[in-house]
Amino acid sequence: MQFPNFDPVIFHIGPLAIRWYALAYVAGILLGWRYAVGLIRKPRLWGGQTPVVNAEQIDDLILWITLGIIVGGRIGYILFYAPNLVWDDPLEIFQVWKGGMSFHGGFLGVVTAIVLFSLGNRIDMFKLGDIIAPAVPIGLFFGRIANFINGELWGRPTSVPWGIQFPQAGIEYRHPSQLYEAALEGILLFLILRFATHRLLWLQRRGAVAGLFMVGYGLFRISLESVREPDAQMLPFLRDVVTMGTILSIPMLLFGLWLIWRSLSQPAPVAVSTPEQVEG
Image (cartoon, rainbow, N blue to C red; front, side, top):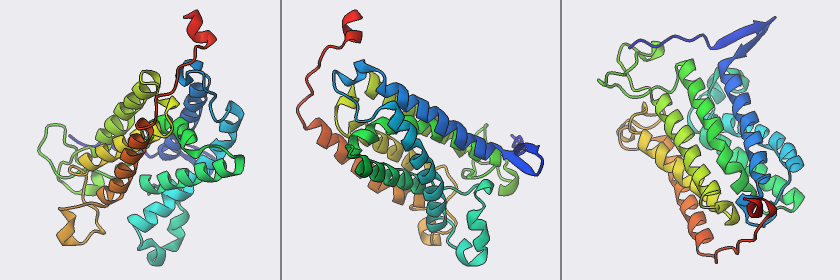
């Protein structure tokens, strides 16, 4: 099928262009922020424990996280995917509205923000990560939809009936890998983490939810690399063997497994009845 050929600009306010890409980031951050606040306001999820932060602290943290996403995502994209911009067109480094953000760079930016915020406020960084992790798939979903609207990060050539001919990718029909990622990294990962927080009550286990996010994202990203277009900067003889996304996801996956193992190896927390639980 033909690509719908979306206009990346929603509308103009004078000389200012409001783009779908920017709107996706705003929506992901705002909805993720409110979801995280909602988690700390549900006593049942904490089994009598007190969350390490309150709503006001989450309000402060969101500014740090936003900066981590933007700066980390852009630096990661330059380092991992487009180092040539440093000498070819250095001014384009600052043109984030054109797209070109790395999830792994943004992830490291968010981790840095959480670590610095935790140290500055004497908060357990692993428990804080457990609160932020369940909200991340919301942003991932909107980000991948924005990638699709921009007609970027398309998949490999395919003969499947839903293959799409992207304008900037030649005449071949390709996997809409952006939509695959929106479904797995966004919707499915969100549901998995919600099961962990609301059914398994893993918010009571230090680092387990954050670890599950890393494992889930790592597995989904590695599996989908087989249908994504290989990275242009990889050496030709490696391009069909390994991708940059796989290389960057493996340490994330391994660290996530360690976090889960570390958390589940500790004694189970003792449940404490709360007024909400007593009332049913």
